[in-house]
Length: 448
Image 1 (spheres, rainbow, N blue to C red):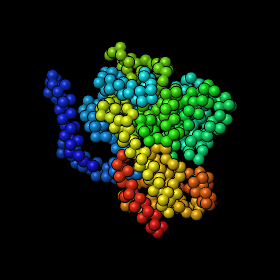
Image 2 (cartoon, one colour):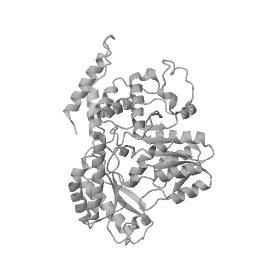
Image 3 (cartoon, rainbow, N blue to C red):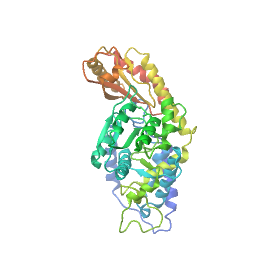
Image 4 (cartoon, helix red, strand yellow):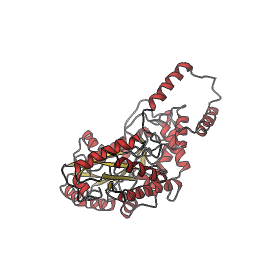
């Protein structure tokens, strides 16, 4: 967990940073080092009460450790503590952010998008749907039943109607239901999920875009989780076609703090048409007069934002350019391969029933049993038993009808059931599949 090389790199970076302020009179804030040391040791001990998110045996929720270069750049920037709302709060970090946004836009074949970083995907999606509301004030939002819950919540905040779209066997929006809702004339925006966080399914974006054109509605792509996978070479046909079509949507959200190797919180919202910046117009008596250049606060609903996020992201994108066949793409390919291999191993086991073939790096599977209630109980037992052996999984509640599509002999003595879910988002997961399966099968074989 601790790499002395990281501490050395941080120290060297801080020394170089300090050189830029050598012309100032000497000044160092004073604090009680002895008391601070005691407090920090207490904090460190209490922080041990966390799962080992950085380790490959953590295969539960979508928690990916930031890359060392991101950690170091973020920490180094905290000695300045820039604020990217206005240029006089963060000149260098604001420049970094603008450069990062251009590079992210190019991932989707957008050369000059309007966009900025946010505190996370929820805030980014809020901005995208807020713009949608400004353009279609009397029209609602539709998104998949498996879309992130933030969309229904944001719609309520914005005073917009929201309707969940049924999903097919693979967890994607059913196009017949989408068209049924569009034909009623009450929809202004379709949210296409580019990798839902429950099942990892990628909505059929080409078909969505065709319907959006037919009914003159906007398309917002929630690529918070899956956005970077467009760089990879191992996508299946549906996902590849969906990511290739992203340039045709109106707005995109992506979370660098997921597969972009960043610390929390670092989200990003992009708009294809920069003219929507008109909706952000506001005045400030003191923050926008230090320069005639664009202040990021002028195109954001957030005010103060951590400039450290932009510093860390820029450094990471220098190390891992956002290009196809690059090193970041290779890391994502390893996660995709791990998910496919894990799915195959589960299918070969007598203890598990894997569900849909993974489109990204999320694998969902049921505990083999004759009925839904028994399967749920076994899943919870496996979850607890595996954790005792340092393998950490996640649980997901799904309709029994969905599970039966992959386990047709399962008796439905409940409406929903508890399944297991693993997110294999670390490139090292492929090498650890043997150890993971050993613990899973040992847990499944143990008495409940």
